[in-house]
Length: 304
Image (cartoon, rainbow, N blue to C red; front, side, top):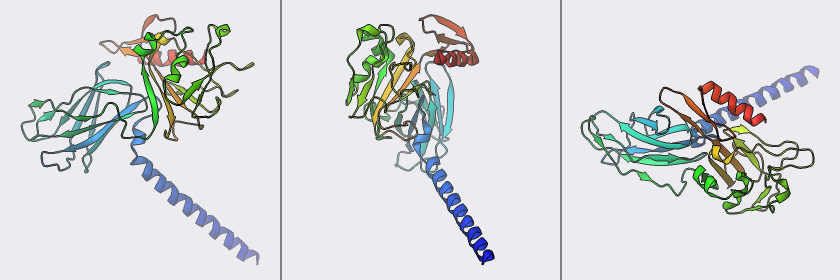
């Protein structure tokens, strides 16, 4: 009797192990083929389809992506179905070039990549010498996000600096996105002024905050502002913000930890010729630093 029970337990354990293995393989396959992996809480992506003049998909096309701000170049290759993906791109302006043997080099207009978004750029290649570069009119829709069902609003640094923020706090403009309501600004909290907000009827403790891809949530109270002895989230100088995006609904599970909004803030770090980074400090001063020093400054700032 004991031997039979042990045998059943072993068989049951093996069956569970096999089931978990199958589920892991299926999950990995789905995630690898998902465009969501092309972006994170601090980056965006460019994706599209490449075809020839007959409409047939083209594989093996080299896609060069160059950042207008830093000059950094990324390369990718289209797949058998003609789809290409350039992922993990810091927000900014990018120039694309498409190269294939026996076809003219295609160069669509510059594309603006926003945090957490995937821009769709579809290209039709023309037969010709590769040395010839042809400016093509790519199928680019800057207003409609077709790669994701997430709803939200992206606010650029110029907008943040142009809005009269009484307390120099970017949370005061989060209500520019539909479905967002905030508490009345408290004039007695000058110097802090972080406003708690509510998205689509959820509570003010249901929101998620990231800065440059780093989690800055207040796990003591789960609120953005101060509460009793709990400090609020880290608030950068508005002059240091490149852009931020608030996603209000239908965003990917990889971004959110709750049912409210997902707020992603990107700060400015520019690159001079020679690879020197310019870090914008919280007091508005500029400091020449290396890539590693820039990262250390950000980490220290988030701990303040």
